[in-house]
Amino acid sequence: MKHERRSAYIFIVIILTIVADQISKAIVRANVLGRTETTPSERIPIIGEYFTLMNVENTGAFLGMGSDLNPTLRIILLLILPILVLGFVLRHILKDKTLDNWSLFAFSSIIGGGIANVYDRIVYGSVTDFLFIDLGGIFKTGIFNLADLSVTTGMIILVLFSFKKKKTS
Image (tube, rainbow, N blue to C red; front, top):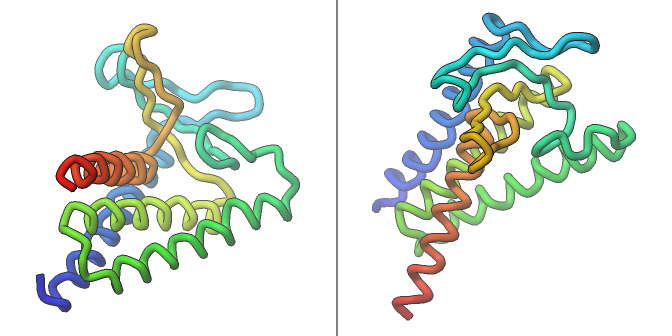
């Protein structure tokens, strides 16, 4: 892939990831009653009770981890550190010309999802999470959003391709 097309591909994936995430969160904030101190979030079934939509503002990281940290530590761990890591990852994928398209897609998805959640923390002071899956005890997730899904999908792709590369070498 030529350098210009490669860079465009990276930035298009990042931008589309951010846009999809921010649009979905804006729709949820506007249309789904959120959790307050005294009431739980409205639960809207998408596929029965297996896949539901809700509105939870998460002041921490994944599954609310870090929400009870003091404000200075929370700024360092949930804003400054992620921004630095995302910057280094972006620099890496722009410079490393040996990365295949799947790896570029995976890293770009991770960067886009990371930027989208950092943006929420800066602008709203929390991240809007709204998707929940419960397959009757077989499989159950925490409440997540499209940015989380992008980061997770990117990580899964990277892990699968690392195993594939190890098998072929």
